[in-house]
Length: 244
Image 1 (cartoon, rainbow, N blue to C red):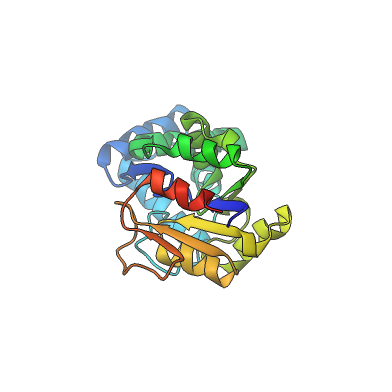
Image 2: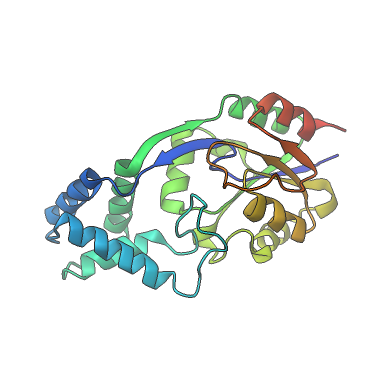
């Protein structure tokens, strides 16, 4: 049935928990900034981060506020660079990326693949399927997390919203992937855990859809996807995607 499988990442292939509000995060990040001459109190740094993300996201508000991706359409490294420059430090891209990744590591409670993820992706590749990623996420986080989890080689192409200035459910994001790789819509399926961003967006782009509900799915009614899994089941997902 499907030649091409397009996946969301967080909540679909990868289980992640982050907490950006914990005080120790901002205490340690303030110390990191102080190492490079940018002196902040933890509260000042936290407020500066919130203000800058809000300013950079102005006019780009998400369709819904309960998704786990906070500001997927901006480049988050620009926020960390601006925090240095507010204190007169001319930080480059490398330092700004490292600050962002340190922030991500401090915020992370856990990061792991759902059981059977690699086996499922391997089965699709062995079955001759093309496999793509379409994720509302930040490249400086996601690219490295995928490498750490060992799943990057399974994908024929990876699209991350921070690099494309648009995000799901915007049909333009789907169209960029479709046109870049010459994907045949009637032979492609979008797999995701979000009824609006993944399922509604994919349907508007003319794609088939597979919805899987996980613990970090938005609170919503089951969407009208072509296939619905009420809980994570990689074996069943594999059978659906490999069906002729």
